Image (cartoon, rainbow, N blue to C red):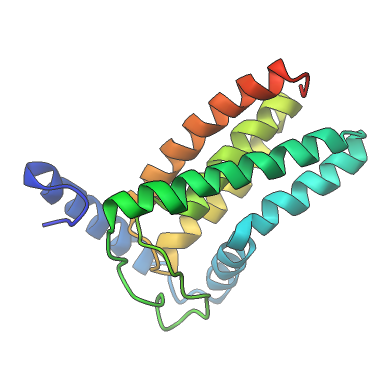
Length: 185
């Protein structure tokens, strides 16, 4: 039974997590995919990929205000997820330090929801809001890669990622409204 949800939903969540892990296991061991997923998970540490992308984008578009806004927004999202939601759920990770085949940083927080996935969804929603729907393939692909990398390296359950994406998207939608009111696009 899942330690995330009790009752009949626990079995559904466990079945989902096992099914996704089995699918990912069919790809694990491919040297190219392993490198891409390890790089994606590493780039998501401390939201480095989102801060770097925001800085490059902000300089190119002459929008340093949006660079600062995204940094503050990611900080707030991280606080909500890592100091709020993760403390409520205390879900154990599928492994303590990830799959032994991958060298990754060992997290100190609990598993649900995935902070990498939440930050990725938050950043993608925010950046698409500023750049328009035509930017969705870029920001959506990067967010999907970072989020998918977490169950790939076996430091998160797939359901942690789904939860993280939902949380990050909701926080991103709220942040977009706040940013618009502040004249930030």
